[in-house]
Amino acid sequence: MTGTLIAGIGLRPGTSTQDIRACLDDALAQAGLAEAPTRIATLASRFDEPGLAELATALNVALVAIPDEALAGFEAACATRSTRIAGLYGVGSVAEAAALAAAGPGAVLVQPRIATARVTCALARGAETGESSS
Image 1 (cartoon, rainbow, N blue to C red):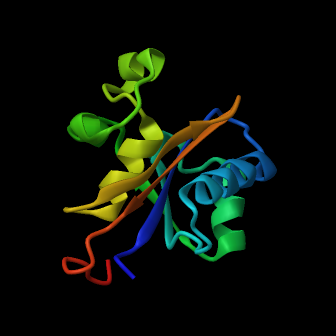
Image 2: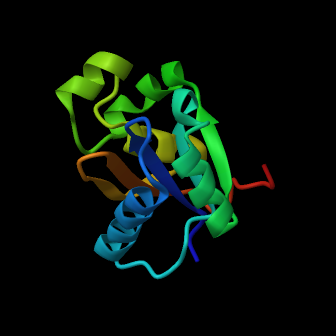
């Protein structure tokens, strides 16, 4: 294996667990991955969303909150751009930036964001050598 798989999730308030799971499953399928992520990362302002918390519990993975202001540091690494999101958070993709931030230094984007009406999901892989037990 080549490092920890992290799912970055962007979502609208009130999004159901089923909608989030469907988007995650689509991202994994598009990336050709059968493994589940070891963590799910999202905006700190979305950390308490019930659907997201339920999914993390169901998958038995940690839910990581990324401070909104920390996302901007990952703008250059984002593969996709939403002008609406860029205006709100200073980054083209919340899902991509959150995944990269949670995966740590040396992380690479393995699946650019995919979007549904209420959810975005991207996948990043952490560098194997720099990992520690958070």
